Image (cartoon, rainbow, N blue to C red; front, side, top):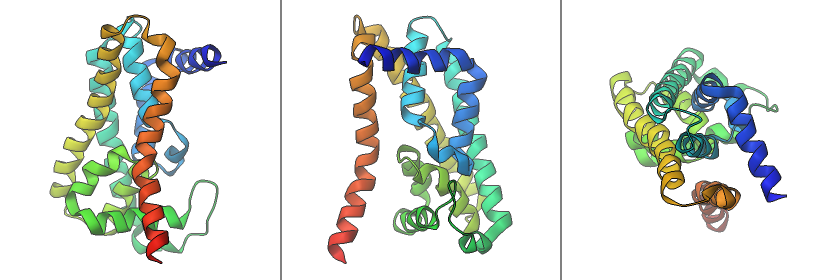
Amino acid sequence: MENLLNLDLKAIIEAVGYLGVFAMVFAESGLLIGIVLPGDSLLFTAGFLASAGVFNIFFLSLGSFLAAVLGDNVGYSFGRRIGPRIFNQEDSFWFHKNHLLKAENFYRKHGGKAVVLARFLPIVRTFAPIVAGVGKMNYQTFLFYNLIGGFLWAVGVTVSGYFLGRLIPDVDKYLLPILLSIIIISLLPTVVHLLSSKFKN
């Protein structure tokens, strides 16, 4: 079963190629449909495949970085243009007001560095640039943190997968547990925040 899942994930990324990876990174960074995409595991696995010669790590990292930064810019522009009206939207499969409110509270707590921190939080990273636009965050400030966050996330996670693939023999045997660990670690801050909020209430 583990081998099947590993092959499926690797096969999907190999099938979509560079453009598919870049498109998914772009969507998760600033489009509402991006909340269903596996950003961290996607980048890590693509980096791992680069270690096996499927991708060029430099081109993969650079393209993922640009896609992440551009995606956040689109999200920011969307939030800036739509403004507070977005909070009046009805919940749907792609949009949940609760997600937007969580991102807004995250911004209120962490300020500009939230743009960087949000990169490593599923769901929050999709809504964070939209909230920055809604709140009319200074664009130069947003762009500065966007570039830092985009680099640390897109390049950092991808290169981590690449070097792990180069350093550990037969690392593909352990790819599924590694990916599950990445997912759990990335979700942990959100879970802790939700539990702490529940106990406070």
